Length: 251
Image 1 (tube, rainbow, N blue to C red):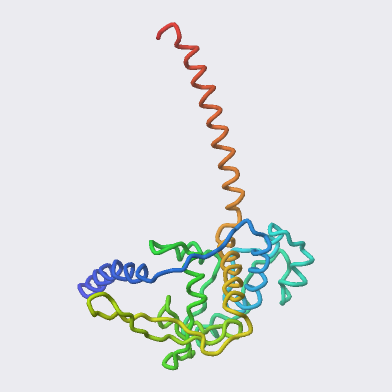
Image 2 (cartoon, rainbow, N blue to C red):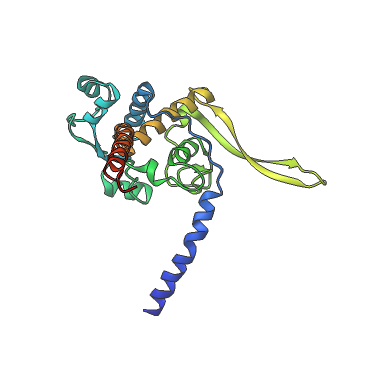
């Protein structure tokens, strides 16, 4: 019992350290716009082609994509590659047991990944945008890949053919007073089929879609909230005028 308590206390002490470590990574701003339907459609296409094979979105249904301006026929033709129906959840076909054997743990569900990755260092979209562009070759890792945002990650770089192969290089920068600072920089060693600008744009679309999946009704919620605030403002003016009318003889 005492040893269990010691382990529990040690884990509690590790939490602040882990939080500081995660926030020490400089995240790039994700240039996303959740009202851009073309971007969301492109992101959905990238997701089902490169992510859905391992990462499901078990809280999202295919027919929800009609909110992005797609018809059910377009969803069947371009976004469903299995025997799933339009009304089905976006589940991965990968067996969890096989996934655990191949990767050490089943790949996480991505339904709310953009919301879960939000931190003091940036939004969940910023984390995803930096993470997906931060893979580099590392022969010491079982998959041959590592990541600047998620060190020793078990996920391989599934988009490397598009981005190319990056390597992490350390450079020295001169500082005032004769001091030097070592900085790490990602360099494309083998170009991919996309230019860096094209790849960043594709990743931004993918992150845009992942952000949308975390809360598909966000746009409607914000619009409804605006109408509610306008209504409450008008109701306040009327209530205040009524209050003055009732209490005019007293005041």
